Image (cartoon, rainbow, N blue to C red; front, top):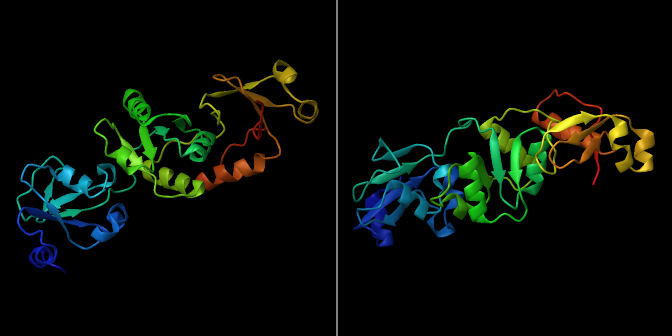
Length: 258
């Protein structure tokens, strides 16, 4: 194991430094030149542990236990010069999160979460400030792949999405927050709730083939979009079954109107 003394000698960062030891899971947040067992960080004696950790690129949302010279510490604490700071990732599952807001790059994940009945706010034109405001005002967990956004002071609660594939992202969010699943209960377009509706109330909005082949429908109470069990229904069901092995399967799901 590398000692602070040898590390500081090699880096020239001995005096006025603390030494941060990130867990292996957190190394990806650091710049490549800093991905080492013990990272010297210049220290003036006034910065908090949280500031030091975030200065290396690790958002506090992705940090769990902090140890200073082996003793548990808080993000607001100030270490002594020369201290060794161990940084661990948070334990999963975290405190359950039932409401979310997603950044503009996570549109496919947003639709998947709504399909599962998870309350998920999303706009493809939302600015960073709007996302932070909505998260705080509505008490929603902000999900993003933007590390800088997670380091903003205005953040209420957030989490980094590690996966790049929507299926991986879905599995990750469910494992981390364990939200209650109510498949087929939300509109995948606007997040509104769905209610079954008689065919004759929506027949005028349907194409002739849909009117002829389907009899059971649901309508979003928010945007009014109509849904039914269409050709792509089996694919949607596979998404639900990937989240839980058994699920209710309403006859109306699988198609949608404009």
